[in-house]
Amino acid sequence: MNVTAKFPRLSGTLVLLGVLGLILGLVASSFSCGPLFAAGGNEAGGNDVKLKANRSKGIVIVVPEEIETYKVPPETVLVPVFVTSESGKAHVKHIKLDFHGPKGSVSKKVAFDQVLEPAGKSFDDILKTLKGKDKKAVKDLLKKGAYVELEIDVSALKLEEGAKGKIDVGVEATVDGQAAPVTVQADFQALALPGAGGWYGGDGHVHTSWSPDVWFIPLENRVKYAKDNGFGFIIITDHEDGINDLWSTPGGYVAQCNAAQSKYLIPALPGVEITAANSGGDALAYWMSESAVTVPNNQTYLAQELINRINGHNYPYSYAVIAHPYGAHPWTDWNATGFCGMELLSQETVAKPDTISRWFTLLRSGLSSTMSSGRFVVGIGTSDCHNFQAPGFAGFTWVYATSYSSTNRVAIWDAIKSGRVSASGRKDLGYFTVNGAVQGSVLNVTPGSSLQFQLVQTPVTGRKCTSITVFNKDQVAVYTVTNPSTSVIYWNTTAPSTDGFYVVKFEFTKTDGSDLSEVWANPVFINVP
Ligand SMILES: [Zn+2]
Image (tube, rainbow, N blue to C red):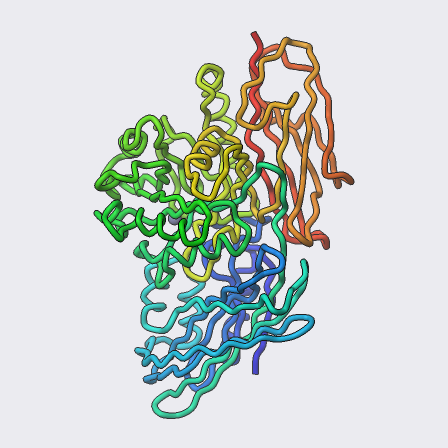
């Protein structure tokens, strides 16, 4: 028996979830995992990975409820699978994937032959742990079972854009010598990323097995996923306490990024996530010196000192980006200065109001320095993906890069630092120019002259743009268009009499109106002499 329940994405359903979990626990269950609960308060944006589970004779199998690919036709589909045993001694012999597309099926059987330690938890407790926010507990559970990412080649099926399918995941196992076969089914859809000349999509915050809270996701797998799904780049940002002193050693962290980049022909940028002392929050370190022996230690430096050490590591290139500023591990010291970016969307599809108002405050307070330096706090979107989560699953960064190549990391590091960026929840792309000036530019104008905005929106397969809003520096909406009927909208206004900037927010949903997601296009600055 295999029962699925779809839960609404409202945090108000938490109590309901618990009750339903009890009811469904004895057969099979589908539930939300992770960050939605950790972050809290993000009512509008679905940012959770839903998992689907089944069991037989104490063997438990868990997969994501929905798996999507983002390049058409997809060549491979990656399926994260977790198998564990509640209490008995389990011997897993094979895992089988059956992919059923609209016009045919493919199968793959993987010999496994692994004896699993009992989880020592009931089915309900296993699910509770997986959907909880304690990442270390999740890892400890995954370690006792078998967590694997299985890939199935679907190229022969020539799946078209929008094609749907089903993936049956079956385990052949014995528990205490007794056969205990169990299967579970995931939904599949082949989607395509939007495209626009010069724009490259990627994820700026990705975890692998280098991180203490991730179990068995080799760095190479993340890079291959990015390549197979049409990304233009991927930034690997494992926790510093997982990397330790292996940053630049042979075979170490940077070397693994180099190897994966060469193998898959996509920029695989080595970054690192570093926690400030005294629970001050997390900063991402970008464009660090790849040959330095090490990077600044975790939980060692207060916020300002941490930013200074990141910025000084590969001066004048390296820069700090504030991670999940209002998330479960929030940034606490807003008096600290010198960081070049912040996550607007972190495992989120809709930004928190606090995040956006903080960003506008930072943009305004830095305005005079932006006019002379061109630098400002750049907003990015990232998934912060851990176990079961794919890069970009909620939070994505589009960059406009003019000298892109598969080996040019500098083009990506520089585009982000320069603000040629749009932060996106569900990978939809929105961007704009003012009098032809791209995002991140400082445009010199005379007061009262004409400003022509070109607003461009291009969604992922099966989605649509529902609104475009232009904000001025005071976060006041000065122009809104709903349900734009063309991908390019022009809007004219008059230049302000004092220095300022414009930011554009795009909203997208699925074509049925569900799954709201935002795109925040970084500012164009207006310099008035
Ligand atoms: Zn992280």
